[in-house]
Length: 79
Image 1 (tube, one colour):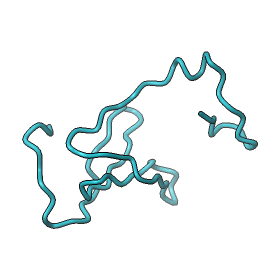
Image 2 (tube, rainbow, N blue to C red):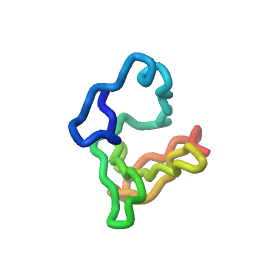
Image 3 (cartoon, rainbow, N blue to C red):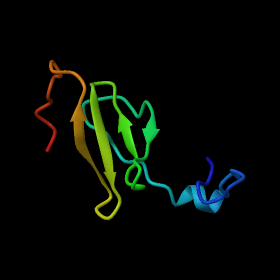
């Protein structure tokens, strides 16, 4: 694990890694990639089911941002 707050990509300490939380993604596998927009918002990431989701840091949730496949199966488990 590396910190994005350092320009030389120093590895995170064990204490910093222990503070990380896994955020589950329902109905897909991912992330496949990450991107930020020109306003510094995001990250955005793509998932295996064709969704592009965006991180809402203030709420600590991912929201659906776009769908790349018109035939995407929508799980009934999604809120």
